[in-house]
Amino acid sequence: MPPTAGETQGEDGGSASVSQRIIKIGKIPDDSDKKASNRRLKDVEICVPIVCGTIAFYLGRKASESQSHKWTVYVRGATNEDLGVVIKRVVFQLHPSFNNPTRVVESPPFELSESGWGEFDIGISLFFHSDVCEKQLDLYHHLKLYPEDESGPQSTKKPVVVESYNEIVFPEPSEGFFARVQNHPAVVVPRLPTDFNLPAPVPVENINERGRGDTKDHPLSQWFLNFSEADELLKLAAARQQVQAHIIKLRRQLSMIDGMTQPLKPASSYEYT
Image (cartoon, rainbow, N blue to C red):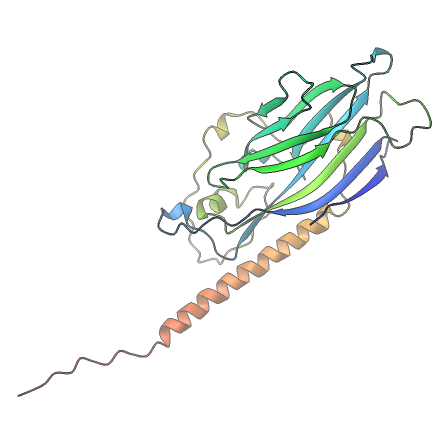
């Protein structure tokens, strides 16, 4: 699904660009022969809303030909919650002209800051915890330094902001993954039937040893964009999850009914002499 994009004017006059799309991760092969925590939940989807973005400040009098802007690229939760519960690490691929252009961020907040003069596409690779998905997700985000309206001198106080909303969908998650994130605010999950038994959640290695990973009090949070459709998208995702939970319940009931209506096997016949 191609993203839809639009140019907007930030509340404080800064230039802002937004886009939105849904990314569905491919299904993982059935592993019903493995331990219970790895069993897949059929007809269930877990949604993780994320935002990829860049914020660029003009350096003004401090600018030079090779260093005109300071900028930050990041991956954050759509509601600024900690994404470390799902994402293990993020790899940012910068332009080859940078020293060490491949940057690895092992813990949230997933971001890096640099300075330069040119615009380019930044490669962003998301790596997930082992119980989430074995595949990486590759995204691209355009670094924009200059506002669309260049009628006057560029402000040093009002940055150029570009953000994209992405809803990552994981179909048929493992029971262990579901149990671990079902109450986490960064994740949208359906309600399973009350009599559905999940395995005890297993915490991710070293996740409790990290510092705070959310971006609610981030130094740049005042420039983060509010997506007008994000709340509606989350509501639609939650409604879809409820439908899926109802489907699970109905299938279980039908399965029980089918088992009750199976014809009885005839008793063994004995031959008397």
